[in-house]
Image (cartoon, rainbow, N blue to C red; front, side, top):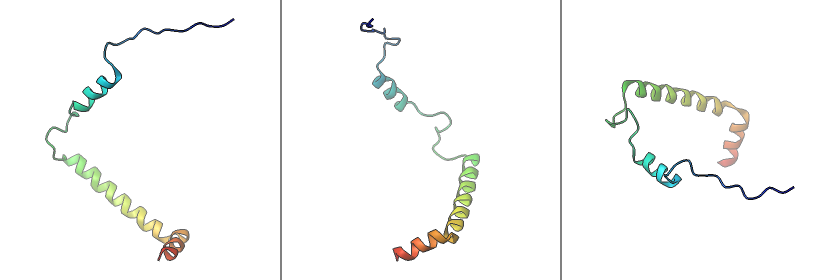
Length: 72
């Protein structure tokens, strides 16, 4: 028993390309000013501290030290 061609009706009248175009043109909520808020700056500083700590840990790993010696 074979199944014939299945046709699905469109649920919207807007194409996918048009939807993404509209979404790209909309401004995100809360970013109208352009300057980061206090909370955003705090999160960036915290992430920077975490990245610095991770970089220091990576520098002490034997495999990383060996790889850096090979690179030089």
